[in-house]
Length: 476
Image 1 (cartoon, rainbow, N blue to C red):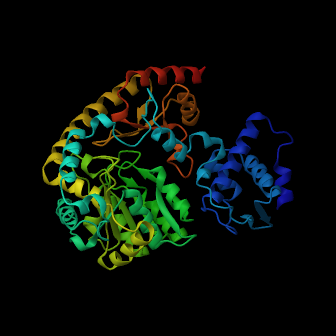
Image 2: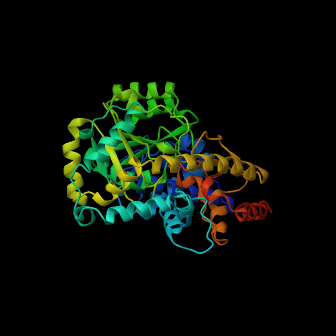
Image 3: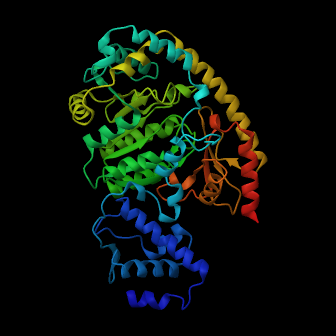
């Protein structure tokens, strides 16, 4: 088989061919490093991979031959190519193809988190400090400082502050999710909630479905747990159901992690029809769904919640106040089946010991005195104005939204033909602008012409002038 394939190769490879071959090789390495291809796994056929990557079959043959020469894959005559090498030590920095290393998700997060005078952050995933309820936070902190000393210096209870869990139960009921306080466990963040669920439910090599595109830190967390990532294309109404069903049959995944409301990065909302079909598939294949709902309070009109339809049978619902209240106040929660809570609590104690009692008290106070409700009303109004303004300004320079979201902070936008988002992001960094190129959200690496914009962080006129100039230079 290899000899036959060698005869198919062109005798000379030009510069463009070398680039395409390098891209194929980088994609295979990425899938092996990300555990979506494990030792012994069969690689896509030459024909199918050529169609997927939009290259010739001879390009795929050459890439496979070079990877085989490196000892990373091997050929079985009559059967195809298979992963040969043992898994390398886990490296979260290797989350994307090496060609995109400068703008991979962890690097973007580091750049966005680093303080810098005059740096614009349209690619980050949080609100500007000026949008946060600073005066309410200061007032509440002064009140807590005069309160019980245990709030200031002691650990919180294992499940978390009971009055806050009781209040969360009432808030969840407004979305149709019936969960008593003893089915709610407080965490330090939404990220910790997902990490605990992965520790509880996964073992190395288990398959997990994610949307394509999806929040890039899902990729990082799943890599940390050595899971096999299976990406299913996302549509304006939810995951592509036919592709989702095919992935269930082929990979038998343990989990599906998603945002049902205000999807990150697309801003889409799950439709009731897709939600119903998802839950039927989950029941058929015994699939657990983790519903990440950290943007719930940015909605104007609530979208369907999988946990509400399901009754917490196969769906775990998580939330957080980091994006809406304060990133410095670490407070999230897990709502799970009753018989999971004790084991999850043990894991929480083993990995972080006590709960963040101080943060829980602060969140509880702001929720009870009405400060949080008034703050979020203002945020939603400001967000709607920012969304309209950002859509208009981006449209003037040829950047078009995939959809226009009904709420939230994210716009998933397509660049004009011929402009690569990663290249644009690298050049924008020299101008003090942190962008979020599409392929950091796409496990399949099919979003090279997309950018995610945070409209709340896109109100500086300098952003649009610099983007227009950089795109003009790219066209030249």
